[in-house]
Image 1: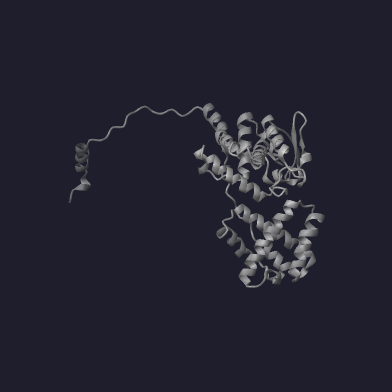
Image 2 (image 1 turned 30 degrees about the vertical axis):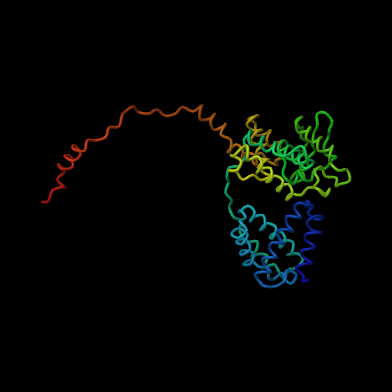
Length: 337
């Protein structure tokens, strides 16, 4: 392998986790970004990924890669910016290990982030959410597990990474039952749970195998549930729920939509965006304002308190065709001099 492999290994295994204190999720996301980049570069340059040199990963190639993931892979501008941030972070690290790459690094740092659209968040209505929660079959062990996962994801407004990494010792069964969540940026929060959520969680614990991983939710092999595994489970039950609620089929439902649904239902119940921010574990209340834009309740209240402008009374009358013709005939410009 070339020197690029050694530098990448030091970046992912030493610099990020030890010097920067990055989480495992961050390291995995950065590693996946470079996997995509190196596969693209190897195909473009017609070499093996292990034969790539640092000098070959230049600004034009990175720009082509960013265009590729947007056009060919269908990634959003937000995902494109995340891939670019990982690449820039690596070349910032490389500046101190390989001074000869300073000019190359400067050009890469000059690649701008792309502006993203601030679209309204998608979420499920209460009837749609109830249909999704009822979709798993409680007569099977996998159905009991799936129902518990869906209930906890919705009740806690959890990110998918928080859901699949929660451990058994983070679930406190004492009354009132709570779940201890370590979220994004290592921000911790303790969430009380509904009795219904506790019931389905205890039902899962009664059939969960005891010799598996310490995570709360396991797959059929007894290993910790993965993000891809939960996405597959969710898609399966969305199809089932669409049979009773056809409107679900018209929406694109991802694991994060369950988090948005929890936030919107909490906002509609409390009317307090600060409580939503606290429940979701946001670092800033500005991150929670997206739900205010999506919720029509506040706008309807403001509209009801405003005094609308008055309309002048009157009735439109269609002009008579004969009178219109006579009026036009009386115009001197319609005659030849």
